[in-house]
Length: 527
Image 1 (tube, rainbow, N blue to C red):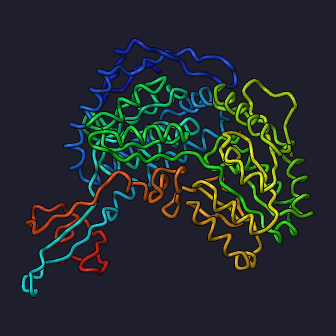
Image 2 (cartoon, rainbow, N blue to C red):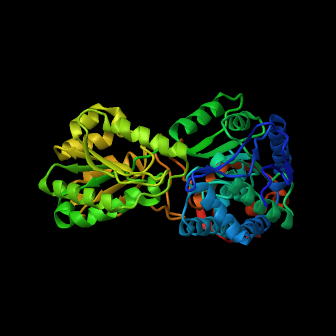
Image 3 (cartoon, rainbow, N blue to C red):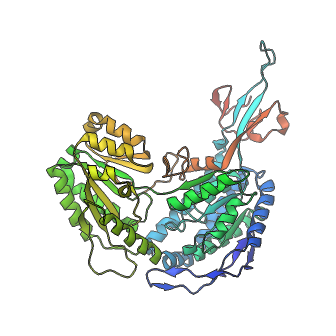
């Protein structure tokens, strides 16, 4: 079923001379299929097609786009175990993990299809004319969101389905009316090709223009660089490392026409342990966090990589419980030998820092590409003085910082870089007593969790998946849920425009029956 070729719109192409293979981390061997990296000509063809497709796709009714998204979900599901087995082969995931991620991917598609069917997401805003207003007449002004143009999406290493070819960035951009060019992740080139084939089938079945979607292979950074610099590309979506996201951000801003890069990057997701909670349930908390730290071999962007508490006998007990529980966790397969090597290197860098002690280090025999958990601890003063300790270690790793006081805890929180999430483990009355801690954490994160774990990102309208830099490049937007569509649109106003020539969302009659803001009043009525 795989060809190793690039999808340039609806056509398969392999004109490049550079080839590569994916890797099976469980078997510790290269997979057989050869993939052809996209050439410069193929990149230009894909962007030209996307540019042409945009002129048509942007005008297609929302109901037809909705059918397109639902058709993608149907075609992905129709791939059956061929897709599931390939994800397992290229990512080392369990069957259950893949099926769960596929369900999330399908749900995202269906959720955006429903959004398009309802239609109010365009934020239609109408201020009718006041011709006899003094001293100056008021014009008729009507505003709505419109698509920005072709979008490049970079596939993620740790979510080969939900954050990749037909993942959140792609479906949000397609829903907005933007053609998408996916730069597939080299670790999951086979999975990306299979999913791309499903998207192409859905596009053809629902009459979408050729070029509404393309999928390009790449073993390195060259294809991505050319795509971001191409003048027909109008926005970029990225999930990955701080270095990668920042490099794309810089490239995009060096263009003659700078474009937005919506990058979701590194995060250590601080967890605050307040005293009364530890007094009541430190063993329970330790069990929950041992599971969260090692979930998915620690390869989630919401992995709890930093735990902060006040020195006490209860914190000592928590530390002992956490050590015991971590060593009971069976190490899991990581995504690729390169990721395993980086994990081992980075955790050893942390271990070698001054005044660091080990809480738990899994030293038993493991399979070749399994990630061995490590929990370190350090005092608050050392942590504040050493920025190296504030950095993410991608894998089953966490650092416990033992603070001398609430004041030192607040100082540490205030000096952290931006994060996706922050968690407070506390009794309810402690939230009031330590409101300054809550406020300090709110200033550093995009999502604040009470008595839970950061791992697990619910796909729903209220989810904020993003945070202050470097968690993301623009903390005003989310990468998850229906509001992620707002990254791929821009506001546009018609002034004194003939009613019959306006988009349906702005016409007096409101033929779509959507909710609009009319003269500062929300209504679904006609004018």
